[in-house]
Image 1: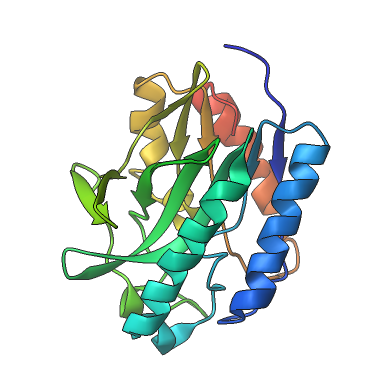
Image 2: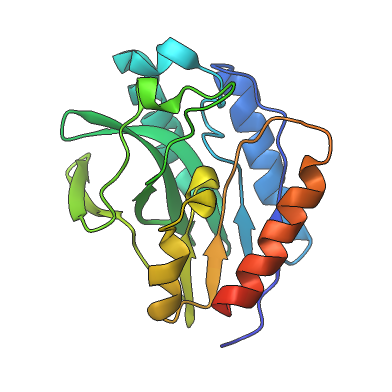
Length: 215
């Protein structure tokens, strides 16, 4: 596996602030490229913002998020970018991450485990993805895979866990490790709590050690 430089960004996104959110995303991609990064992982639901609540049900919101994604694809020349958005597929709404590599949309990963405790209400808006399923979604006449995918980017095998996925007993990392991925990306949108930063840090370190991957 070749050595690659990975960037992450914590974006100050506002629910349904389409222009502001896209400006933040574009700035992050440009900064990562300027710093020589080969890949940047952006947060869960970063296109719409995480806290859209019942606005996620709006067909207009779903369609605008998809249009925004397609508008961002040409801006990824020479870099791999992970983005998050709500995606309507087969009559169901999913919380998805997608991977774009050098102006090519490669596919979508849908969240398996939804956060539904405390201040989280994801099961109200989204459905969990069946980890055993891989499907196709058609967008503007082009078919793209959706499921617990493994992406191949310049010799690097990349898988995903999306936030809550990492806390589940049967987390996707088990299968991804068995499939010999090199890297697991975890785009998250997680509220502040005292001591939570250290919990996140331990999760990342322990996941990398336990599964033998870059996390």
